[in-house]
Length: 469
Image (cartoon, rainbow, N blue to C red):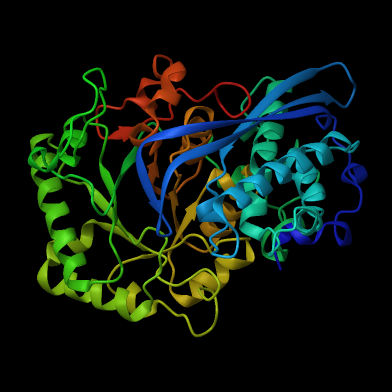
């Protein structure tokens, strides 16, 4: 069962084991902004030309009432990914997302509990499913807001609370995850095998100085200059093809989208991508580049994916060591069912669990089915991500920190989280491709994140208060 559905049966009152460092939520507000993409992104078969960002600002108060701090959290809705359905239109799901965010903010605003952010979120999350069902009825939407979309809708609030907690105590919130600040050990949330352990065991004491920077290669994206069909305005500085992106030095890993429908076409596309990439990476003296095979959140099924990797192993064996993973090949409803083992694929390349990763219980099921990499996203929430990462590390699984063109503040949250988690293979930062204008206010302060030049993104400067910036 998803931990966010358990609430009252386990914790009772957040203040049952008080800590001097506990905080109370004083005020919460949210706002929304729509950002257009430079080019459409293919998500679950839809061409998405914009993203709507929810930003939550939260004021917290210390237990003694003497300290106050304001935190912020931001997340793109990504409703085409989080609520992948034909029964609800994109406009309807976006309307529901906004309403759900507002409901979570209202819920947080009336919460009078004192506690650590993990406990407060754990406490409030038990109401999310009820909120979602009530909203769906009120908005006359034919299906309820699904669990993944609930996590996304609540994630900006979650991040803002962690951010404010760190700011109240004058340090990064990642430094406040031990017994001194948390009322419960991890057994409270994750079971007896975590007794006596706290989240500080599963995060880095300092942010990682270097993370592989991943770049999205869409199924029809130009790979070389000759494939560019039209020129943008002369002042547009964004590269127009894959080799140009690699030449900037801001890329060392690729997420390569394939169709999942035509094996011959997909093999040819992968060959073209890796040949163009290999040539450009060689010129940049980046020989250790990697890639993820992706189907744009369309799921071709295990037989197709298996034949694909078998063909790669036979025809391009040198490519196999470069593959960080093949993204979830089974649809989200069936991926974690007993008949959906991916072990045959995993014998050749690692397999990544992504959109079916809804809770910590999914981790052990996924491992038993052959998955060895988990896609961690800030859009699932700061609390959920930290708990999931702890379970993944205990299980010996690797992490890929993914995004869906999360810009500005949301991009910083993504990189900050990635830089604090061990076993991260790469971090995605696709806003540089799709909405770079939204990042302008941060480029001068964090060029190593928004304009990297050595093939990697650095979290070394994310040591500030709150979420690190």
